[in-house]
Length: 521
Image (tube, rainbow, N blue to C red; front, side, top):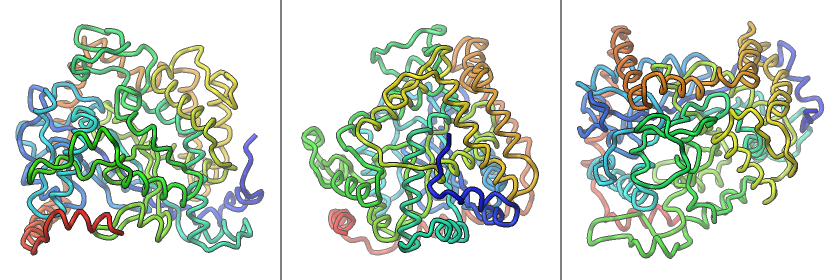
């Protein structure tokens, strides 16, 4: 039975009029994808100038590699806007790739050796150099192949009017920002408990190209020559094979409070690691990493969900969180959906809204070391064996069947589907919840099962993903941008190039002093 942190809170926001504050929920997406050439090989070309400056463009940039595009939608209170705008970004970008396409899947294929993966180059300014040194360090620490994996992040925040109402309902006497931060951390703890629903429902990386392992051994099975898989996997991207950072296990970052979280990250960026010290920070004037500590910067810490605050220029994320509190959360568990030309299906954000509200309203005690291990084990079981018919998860150290647990969570989300439908009108949330519930008892309908079937049909993951990539490219080219939208994107490109030139023209202090000032706060 779902237990709420404030007994009347759900009832208060469920009727039509009070529910209207939820129309102020702010959402945004970040979508990564690799540029590949016509043969499916990682693009060796520079980030197209026609896309603007990757240092200063607000919507189109790169993540780790020069060929790893990242698209960012502006935050919006219109539920449809993030995916509509993301589609426009894709339409615009597809027209600038000149023979290349955007890789459809999360897991890369033909990327070559580590040394062949070019790190993104942002220019000669100090901010650009710092981005490059950080990425150089990531490659040195974890290998560049891991930095070519792509996913989608969902950014989400609740409006001030909601927090005012909830605070009054809970009769909370703390400051508004302290209350908000505390409740967001409660949400995050519950997400760590139940977030495995996302890779089960939306995971789409059950197979990988054998080349991705770079000769490393694994327990994966061969689907066809060149393709490896786990029969019941949902998201190998989120497994030990993918973007997981076992080197960070010793960090022990706690989500039990804002203070504990920021203190742990502060300690990590200042605590030397013997192995990283052995690798060295500099080779003459060349920076191999920003420092030899457990983390170079806070963003190096990987988590399936993170508390966020828009920081000021050259301000560290943990410091901004400590000063100003949590502003929004970033959900990082979504694989790219290779069946969708923009990599994200509409039901993903609809489901995330319901899950995040349930996690917010549900009681959320501190996570003990024992429970943290249990949460990590449950996520591991889902990403590696989520569609296994007899799968069990751990509940208070007891093995329990997966399906009743999942159904119970869907029952607990029902009030929030109704709450959101009361806010927006219609039955989109209730209908989506009912539709996705079918995936619990019918795992063959999940994207991971469908990707596996398609990879078998096309005689390999690479052949399937390449076919999808080309089809998506053709589909996007067939969707013309309006003259108004095209003018908006053309203007954004020119503005970003002008801003890049302005940044580069500014006097630059010594880079070592610039880095030191970043950590001085």
